[in-house]
Length: 247
Length: 263
Ligand SMILES: Nc1ncnc2c1ncn2[C@@H]1O[C@H](COP(=O)(O)OP(=O)(O)OP(=O)(O)O)[C@@H](O)[C@H]1O
Ligand SMILES: [Mg+2]
Image (cartoon, rainbow over all chains, first blue to last red; front, top):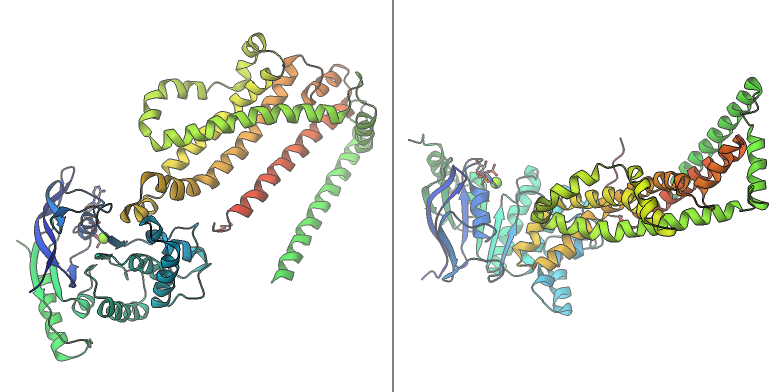
């Protein structure tokens, strides 16, 4: 039986602009939930609500029955925009969450070394963001998010700025990490192939104002291959749903 | 790599020396052409400089004393401007309400040129504090407004990163806001220092003391001794340049993380 972690039931407006309408879903422990939707439909808004960085205009987001808040829950978010702190070295940036959460020095060191290795940035600990490539900066943000061992890991189009090849490698990487550490992940993308490759479940958002248009459970065996007939079948099914003309 | 940078440095230095020589050559040439008792040559200015340095001015006050006094006044006023301007700018940047509610007072005062206060200050204050007050007035607003605006310009995403980990307000101010605004605060301090120089000259020329670069210039202006006046002017320029360079040096040291953009 799947254990429920998060319960979402909300609507969100910015002034008079309705962005999310009657969005209702649950996130289960250890699942890899992917939200797909067209650009500007409210995915980032959804991520921020899940991170407790914003409050919904009506409804709620709860985690284990309690209203979600970064001060109470252990959540991490990888932002869509590059979010490295320019004046912090890679090491100081990655350990930020651990320091904030009051982890002791030796544990911080151990965990930071672990995640830096995980994203393949060992040797760059003293580098500033200006000395890193775009893909490396994104990996810093991902490592920073992993470091705190979050109960919920939010990723808002984390690979959006990367080239196709790096993106593919990062997808393999994230899968490896998820299978190893079994975190609960909510992953946002507008790339359906990426969604089918990663997800245990996909939620499709409509265009603005976003509603949940469809939901898929993806039961393809792992490691998935982008070219098997089964994969392509699921992928075109989801794609068709995304293309349905909205009434 | 290291060698190349060094070569660049020497090249720049060489060009600057050349510029200086060219300037002195043109000046000398102008001196020969104009031939006026009110237009001294570089050599005459240099002699006046030596005289002021060694024997002092018409009241036997040595150049070093003048410089020391002016710097001491600037230091007082500038320090006061920083001590008040930076925390106040931070406070009002962080709590927009404070600024919005006091705008009616702050904004008009900001537009009063410091020089306009001088007559009032001369009557109300005496000695050192006259100068400190005028310089404070001049340097405070660039520092205060610069700090305030830099706080408002902090990238919201940089604030949300620690926030998403549940950081306290104190942590965010200490680790995000302060390091983020520091470069701009230093820049506004540099601007404030420039204005402090303008103010000290004006204040000294009106202020009725015996010692200070501004007063020295004024004494010789009454005698129409151009060589000594020019010494004063050059001294002001060189000290300003030196102080500015110190700031730039410090900025470079602190902000290793900053991307350097050249246009
Ligand atoms: N702070 C805000 N104030 C007003 N409107 C906002 C704000 N943030 C987002 N919006 C609006 O909400 C809508 C959804 O924005 P959001 O960033 O959530 O889209 P998105 O699905 O993440 O898009 P993309 O895939 O391009 O990143 C947009 O129409 C945007 O204009
Ligand atoms: Mg977005």
